[in-house]
Length: 436
Picture (cartoon, rainbow, N blue to C red):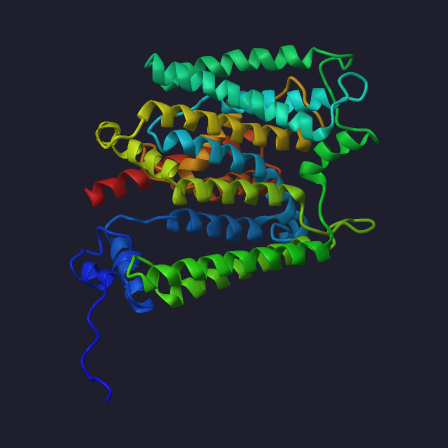
């Protein structure tokens, strides 16, 4: 005989009934797609705008520059790929800055720290001098950046020096170090990645190389399969255990959205974008950016270390009283910031086809901070994701690319970027007031 008694509520359902949806993530209070959407609307009205402002900003940039660009070429395949490549350095540097911004700190040295990493790799692969293999040169560059981050982090946490002053000093110091390393070897200060040497080509192809169209689709299929199975199984396991998890419909929408976005990127990149001959395929730089994004998203969102960073950014004293080793976590955050800046430096060296003393690390770090904040990371600490660096980097790159197509002078790029940054900080400040 079948029982008609109602099913007792799960732990998540009982907890959801007692919570105000304006104060908690929708995944906690929602049991259905409709409830999830309602909770998102409530949080939006309460000041939790999330990535909506930057998404709307990106949409506005696309519409405006597509309408005003000569020949309406902004959304052409060639220009979209160029936009990705021009934004890659900004996106990775912004993800580097997020580690320190989450703590309520800042690292002003990342522009030149990344450049130092880039020039170390370029100098070490020169066949006429060091002749290192490409993988050893990259490892040495990233280790050097890690050492710089450890040094600065130690000065900040052990001697309790202000991060602003330490990293400002680092900006000046590593600008000088960059010039010293550039002067080594018979290159007149301009070591290049041009040539037929295999190790030079690998570094050059970090930005300019690409996979074949078929390889792009295969990589996308493998990624979507892994992401989809992992996400579905994790959420299903949490639902069975009565823990907090998104409704099944939200999980499926998330997987479908990732698949659709990936398919759009691969399809655009696979269009022939060469004036003569054939040039098609997803650039390696996109894979590198996505790899950094995936690694740091897992670290910040799925690890104990990431939870410690958010806790310290919210309240260092409360985190210390809870047993968190605040000094160690902060030091490691500066190490990871510098290592990520080193990855950006490698991409920058590849983009330039070498290194020179014309690197403007001060401007790069300002763009990095601007991209992180525009993307949604709070300057006050405790709130931000790696994805915010990617979105903010796309905004910076979109402004740069669109104004270049219009033939506008660089001063207008600075003005527009600064206004966008002020608008983003204003949105963040107003959101904090509404939440308060």
